[in-house]
Image 1 (cartoon, helix red, strand yellow):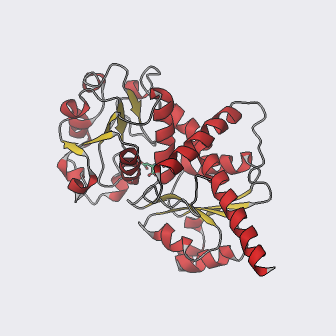
Image 2 (cartoon, rainbow, N blue to C red):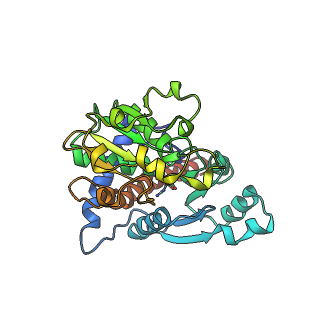
Image 3 (spheres, protein in one colour):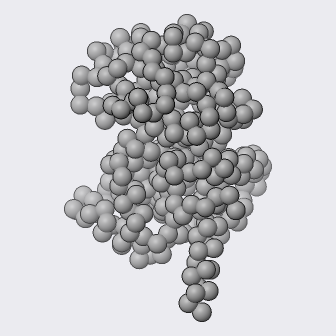
Length: 319
Ligand code: NCD
């Protein structure tokens, strides 16, 4: 078995063969999702709880649909409205939920590391749906699947990740994944939006879009994460669009067949021109959403297999 993880907390712990195992299975789920009957039984009998401590539309919907298509009982907890407001700690919330015997916990949290902490306190599989600026593994996996299907491979590609790198868990997970699969990653954006310690990432850094996009195969745009900024990062949105927003002129520096990606939600006219985002010959933004459901089905299926195997082994020891 090529996927050995108990949780999916980040891309960091994954071996390249594990990444490939998820993507290969996800390819099969893409086919299933295009059928009239989209049901499979990989998660039948299991309970999936989605705990989102931060707003989310597409990621939560994607995980919910993925679980339901595989036969799980899926429950969404609106964490902002609930016990957190009453002062309960993350750990108490986790222990309370754990007592309800979930099998899969999908967690999004504003603090980096919170999901890892929670995973140590529960006895089910935990999937990180985004923690602070740290990781967003299923986003990087769905991006990888989108690239692999569009380009026919996931190695030796030139990929530019552009914009607000400093605040982006999407960028971080993608840099790690694309590096593990032996691609050349460039980061393009203003120095104020580059993370500290960038030299350790094994990437090339540009503060000019035209230079940064020259001859790349993939242009990955990021949302300007205003909610994570405390002012002073960019002069104005208009100025930002002028220098770093993706439009046809800047895109013309990339390869003729370069694809354009964005994890959503988009700020049209800030980091990306709406006509580029909607150009079906260049933009794969809708494909990314489609791949998201399939990748989450694959990840939960593989984790559930390991969970069942571990429980059977435990029962064997007790017998
Ligand atoms: C991303 C996130 O939440 O990190 N969005 C997503 O998962 N679809 C990126 C973002 O918020 O800009």
